[in-house]
Image 1 (spheres, rainbow, N blue to C red):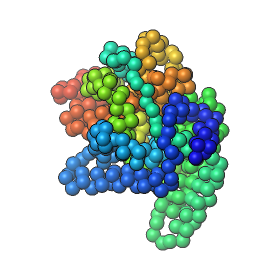
Image 2 (image 1 turned 90 degrees about the horizontal axis):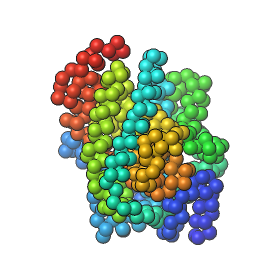
Image 3 (image 1 turned 60 degrees about the vertical axis):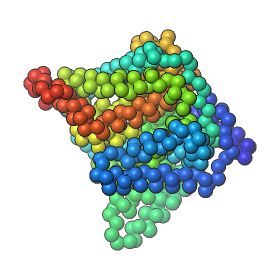
Image 4 (image 1 turned 45 degrees about the vertical axis):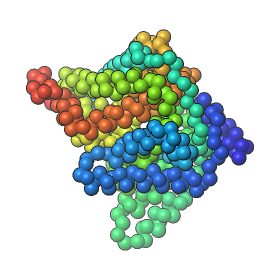
Length: 454
């Protein structure tokens, strides 16, 4: 077992994945049954929560509700330790699969109408300004309230995370996915009833996995800093399907394989509830800073950016669709359920934009926002609250492991807080009104009403 773990860690290091998380003490390598049992638990928890919410007529995202419930239980040390031992390996594997599962989200813009060309520079400016404002506001909030250096987070299931990464960069995985998917699609095509999207779904899932493996293996480390394998995979798939059948083929992919992959994202979000145990020391020590970020800084940023977009004369739906860009993609995709003004098909493009800007400009961004000289925790908070997983990768690539640890905590805590706020009707209605050029208390903004672009 130790030999296997060392081999997996060496493989992960060769793919640019080594960090102090992978170097931490790990539990024995789990069995396949152990991992599958944990995955079934997370899926059942998400579905069971969905049925319970429906029975109570509550319109809340099941995955976020289950995540919060698991987090509340895991925060109790006597319960969190056995839960992490039982579910931690499956959680590590499921989080490792998230990049593949989120690939379809990046293809939505290929089947929707692009904004007018004259709005694109304004949108780019708005997005870039939002990145700078979010990094500065969240980073300096953390710098003002940080309590000493956060303790080291030890990942007991680093071997499982490394094994998942190794599997998703293996040629054998790509070959099995292609062959197995094609065989299942051929079998479905012989059965009367399923639509073409449903018949092609297994084959297209196989193509997605194979394209991801190819991107993970082929992209140089320098390119991965701003174009991670799932974004590279999405670009390849968009070109492939567009050349084969145009936007209709892209839509066929999204209706079948894409829908199936995105459904699988929801149980993966539930796994983040275990952070309440694994990162408990950090959460307790930095509770004041995290509370200020969740309850004050981030809500004010959402309203401020909404008002700025309206002042620039951008359409309300474009502004609302950009606001979730600073939230990790899996959580951001849940926000339209609370604020329908936001377009789900544009949300993943916004999260990719934030991630790319931060990864391309990290040193300049930290210097320009005066965070380069602040604590590692403040730098991690600023980047994690803005560019989520992409920002964490950028910090690791820059050797900022302590800052990357802080980013891992806040991208979950603050992301969940944002998602919950958007589900609160008074908050989401007020935010939608600001995006439309109205004040939160209902007055109209003459600049927005008279804008030539709306």
